[in-house]
Amino acid sequence: MRTINASYFKARCLAILDRVRETGERIVILKRGKPVAELGPPSRAVSQYPQAELRGTVTVIGDIVGPVVPEHHWDSLAGAGATSAGPTPAEAAEEADARKRAQWKGGE
Image (cartoon, rainbow, N blue to C red; front, side, top):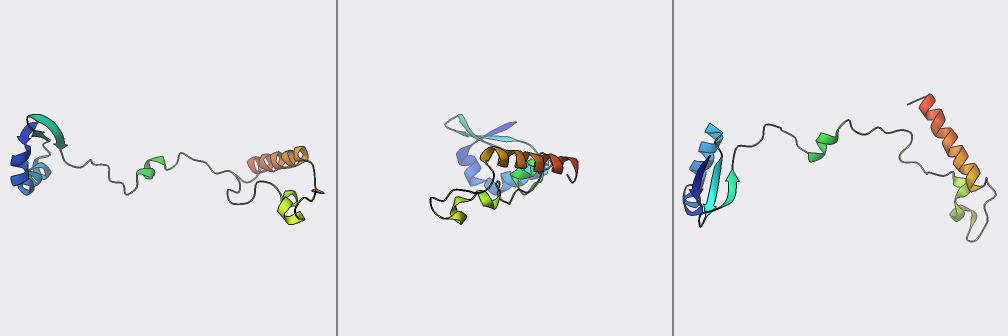
C-alpha cells in the first residue's frame, strides 16, 4: 500500500485516481505525516440501494395495510363516548387469532 502527502494528492488527483482504477492499488493519503484517508477501487458489489441486502429476509403474512381490529370496534364510527355493541376485546382478539390461523393453514 502506497502513501502520499495530501499536497501531492491535491496536485495530481486525477492521475492518481486513474492509476487506482487501472491497478486496483490502495493509497493512503497523509496530512502532516498522519493518515487521513485511504483511496481504493470501488467494491465489486454493485447495488443501487443498501436495503437490497435485506431482500428475502422478511415474510409478509396476511394483510399489512388493512385495520388490525374490525370496524365495529372503532369508537369514532359509533360517535364520541358511545359504547361498542360488538364483541368484547377478548372476543375480538380471539377472532383475530382465528383469522391468522386460517391464513397460515390456507393461503400463505
